[in-house]
Amino acid sequence: MFKQDTIERFAEIETPFYYYNMDVLRQTLDACRDASSQYGFHVHYAMKANFNTKVVAAVQAYGFGADCVSGNEVKAAIEHGFDKSKVVFAGVGKSDKEINQALDADIFCFNVESIQELEIIDGLAKAKGKVAGVAIRINPNVDAHTHHFITTGLDENKFGINTWQLHDVVVMLRKCANLKFLGIHFHIGSQITDMEVYKNLCTRINEMQDWFENHGFAIKILNTGGGLGVDYHNPDGNTIPDFESYFKVFKKFLNVKPGQEVHFELGRALVAQSASLISRVLYVKIGQKKNFLILDAGMTELMRPMLYQAYHVIENLSQESRVKNQESRDKNQEEGDHSPLTTYHSPIKYDVVGPICESTDCFRKDVDLPESFRGDLIAVRTAGAYGEVMASNYNLRDAVKSVYSA
Ligand SMILES: Cc1ncc(COP(=O)(O)O)c(C=O)c1O
Ligand SMILES: N[C@@H](CCCC[NH3+])C(=O)O
Image (cartoon, rainbow, N blue to C red; front, side, top):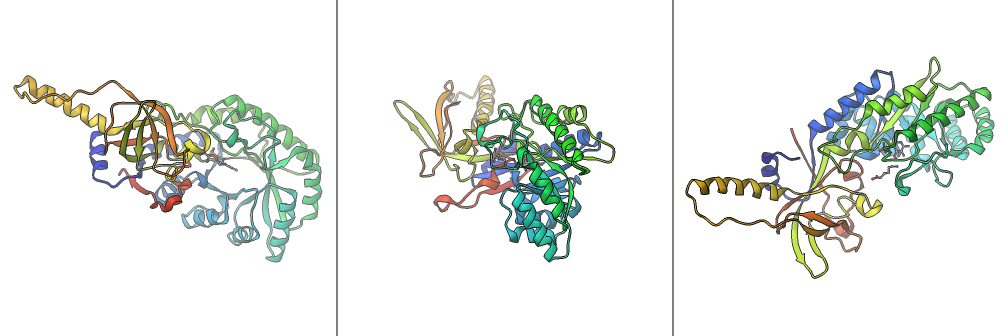
């Protein structure tokens, strides 16, 4: 929901752009901090969800750690003021350069995704005379019940180490003098809304930690990863994710032993609802089979719908202004202004598409919208996570801009 003065402000700005509602961002961060801190849980922000400087600065101010997936994310996290003792580094393909960068930065923990990677980190740490903290990312074969493109914790996924390889892991860990084993790490997928999934994950984590302890390895860190979903269908009615219920599942079902820390790596849940992609209608094509709204934003600005068939609410903001104007004209008419009233038809179905030279460049098909016109402002909601960060300059497009509320 946009206030009228915000829409008026948009009218002055060149589109397309991401609009960040910093109040929504702060309310979300407040809710996450309040819900996690009551159990002493440690939250890391998954930088990959959004590394817009102002967004990252707002998150950092809450004292969260950073979950990084590249050497550049590690560097950016530290430059943004994240405490290096709260920086973790996951990734199935960490290059030697990136590992060295993270070793130089003295980060807290590498979440290691293969046995070979353990050996490589050990060698690189030895060359620097350092000891690297490591957690083993285990692929627990837990179904996240999310879109198959964003599920990560099944046997067929490339992420993490499968449970049948854990014997070899402990053999390798015993050999690696420059690694310090800190604990176990999991991440089963993204946009998870079914809390039962996290209950199943807790069961697997409990089994895995017993397994390591039975093999003589003390576990300090239980890192459950991220994945908490948001309501893409109701951004105004359900803006803040249910952090209370989420953390409560782990409090209830995770077997946390004295001295252990529980870590989380949330991305989407912290930032998704804080932004919308704002664009303008360039052209309206009314056809016999289809009507098209052609926007000045496309898959180069927000590729989630094209990549995952992801649903985003789409709104015509100019219509809201037109309705307001009509209401005031109606009122004036009662007072004697007899200018003709504009009539607005019932919703029309449009395929809302972008300008990119790809047939898949479609935000959604058959969207019910009020009759729309060239120049109308269109908002694509819930675009704060995996939106701006996944933008590209395909077709040599301009870099997408960002605009912020106060
Ligand atoms: C290892 C790891 N941790 C955390 C996240 C953050 O996920 P989400 O944005 O769904 O919370 C991801 C991304 O899926 C990830 O790969
Ligand atoms: N980028 C994806 C999710 C992948 C998360 C990172 N492993 C999305 O937009 O939903």
